[in-house]
Amino acid sequence: MLIKEFHKLPEENLNFDIAEDTIVFMRNDPTFYRKTYFPAITRLADTHRQGKNIDPNILLMPMVEKGCNEYVKKYNISMGPEEAYNNNDRTNILNRIYSEELEQIRNGEYK
Image 1 (cartoon, rainbow, N blue to C red):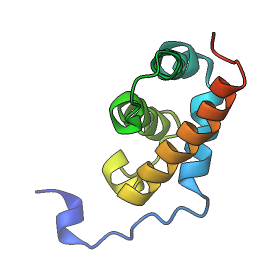
Image 2 (cartoon, rainbow, N blue to C red):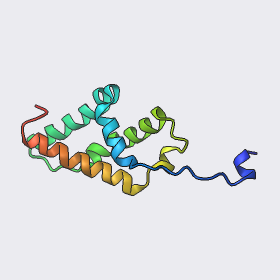
Image 3 (tube, helix red, strand yellow):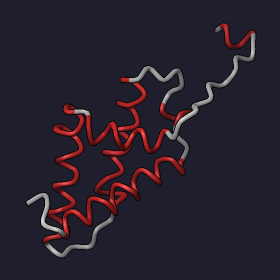
């Protein structure tokens, strides 16, 4: 039996915008950027240049999920990623990265 089954432990209340902080982490952590972020955005850029239909959920959501998992692990958030992020947080991360990076791609970045 777990101790939390005996007592209702208080939920950790995050007093910051975890979605915003996760985006900053994903772009600035050298390992995550090099191994996960850059390859995903490069695939987005290639798809855009080829004129193919872009589905950001297919191209970017695996990166977003991995970013959420890595963020929770790196910063020792006591909640797991399932509790720390709701669907709205994940959608906000995805939409913001997609719109900002697509603008950069249109301006000639990620060649």
